[in-house]
Image 1 (spheres, rainbow, N blue to C red):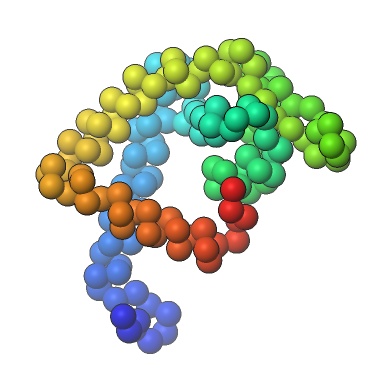
Image 2 (cartoon, rainbow, N blue to C red):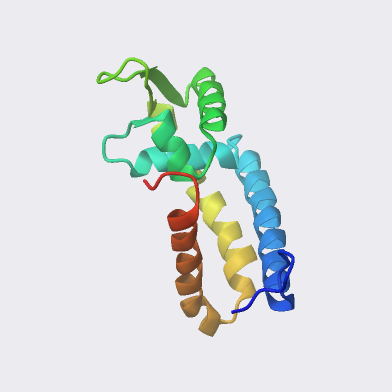
Length: 160
């Protein structure tokens, strides 16, 4: 595909990019609003806790956590400090290197994703999937995974 000169997107690229950005921003707003109303947790809390939940050791360095959820390390550090103050995670120096901070969920933090799941799934189903014809749902994952793979390959955050 040949790109227009001057670092511009062609019409199809522009349309797709704007559609993605509108969708991403609006979905993040709706998901955050719903999670906060149902659980008093934010979408950011949910991202941190589900990343920790997916980790077999249930503990991650702040750097690994940031890479897993696509945040800057400083954002992950500040947010986990706030979550620690609310009793959702514990932060402590790593046993292997005291300069590294490990984050792990508390009992309350471990329970939070399951408690939030119904309020998380409902708007995903209602706002995202119900807007697609069934034939498109089955084909949607492949292009999204391809774009994500390209971001991992060419982006600046380390792979996790």
